[in-house]
Length: 465
Image 1 (cartoon, one colour):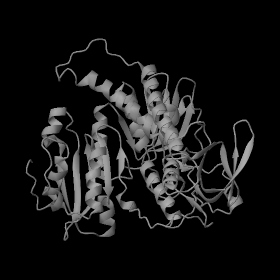
Image 2: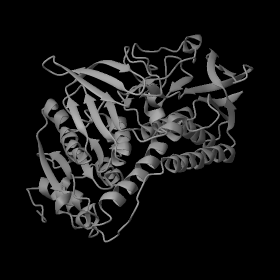
Image 3: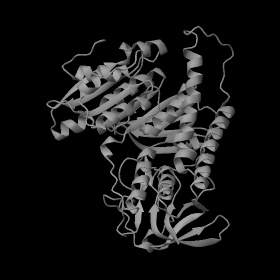
Image 4: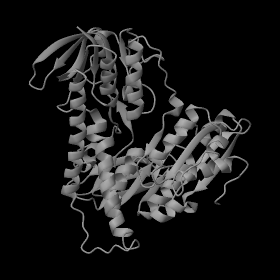
């Protein structure tokens, strides 16, 4: 019998298994697919970043190299090679997880994991054979799948999800993106940079609607420069594949119908928890109406020895949130008392400029009735950003009006995905805006924009604007 069985090998599952092994538990991991790493490594975070980097290189070569004094001729995209490089990046990462399993003596079982009872997991292999394994504790880490709308038929050729968008054989002439959230904006950017016309249809009144409204407005401005067009406050009512053309019909806020025609439609309206085939009821595990596994503050289900983490439970569907939860549960099982501050799990959009956020949005602070002050600093005023021609965007800091404690940091600009870590550290230690403004930041760097935004929040003391 294992001390712990983890069902699912995504960032949550494999980190839980590694941490449990470090703590001396005999651990097994069950993975439905032939490769480890889940959505994130195989068809999510990692491959999308590989394509985002490749397409950004091409875009710069086409649009900014000349200004830098670099002249090129006969520039073209080799999409096949771009996809091949992406696949190689995925393989390196997946092989790395395989190595970590061996290093930590974690036994890997390939096949669909389903409950027989609260201590037994049946692993059904691709050839139909199965084996039962037993564990004192079990973690459900089965992740999520792309959501759709009931009337949309995903044919995976013309009407596609993020998974298919990572393996197209051609650059779309006109890609219609349904959903203005993170996934749609990232993958829309990949093809928009390479010449595709991109139309975004979003039900809400802002892009990336879960983030601070300022970020959505700024991102929209930047993406317009790439040729994106936007249909905000539009409700999609029909999607029809006519062979080589797809027609999308949407209603605007006045109830008028807008018709868009393109060669590809990317459906990116979010993701749903994935528990298909888990047979959770056999173990007595409760699933909510939204399809999530119900857990308490210790991520324990209603069955005391069964836990759940990541996209399959409540909260943001983020790989790093799942990782924190994986380590957290392993430590809880070992009798430790770990802690996660969910407010301080950052969110990132890997467009260019990048968007990164931690803490409260301005809308949330207003709703709570918290008195706050705001400091902003545009990258247009940053020496480093001017040197690299990355002047779009800004850093926005909100601090408590009385105590000056930083309550939220929202950045859109170059390398903000990495810069947000400084804000997370600051907020974990309950720093004030003045604390950051008195720290020396190297010059010239993008991070100076964070210091300046903190100065702006502290009695409007920004130095370079």
